[in-house]
Length: 162
Image (cartoon, rainbow, N blue to C red; front, top):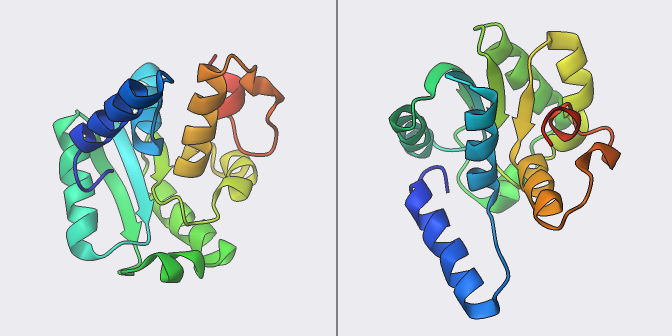
């Protein structure tokens, strides 16, 4: 996870692969691959998390060479509360972060309903937006050999990286 450290995700995937013989990924490992492939160094962050969790995410990304260029978070603590965040709230936070001028924006939380908002916000703002639901779907499809360009409405990610 972004706040526990990416090594935890890598170990989880290694254990899944060892137990099943099937390659595994996580939303965060997929996001990291995308950021590296796209050369993103200045990243905006949108999350629902507490200050402490947000701080850890920013620290972990800085260690990977992705400087924070704008962030918004809601100070929420539990999965249920994450699911109650509205599309309007998510869109507003993304717009606020976009105003800081990042190369891309990451919406980090697989319990936020951001994926369907990405396409329109990318058109409006002119900035790639990588939602962590979309990142794990993108990587899973690639691992399964599926043409990701067939996915529509979830942003440029599915068209821009093959």
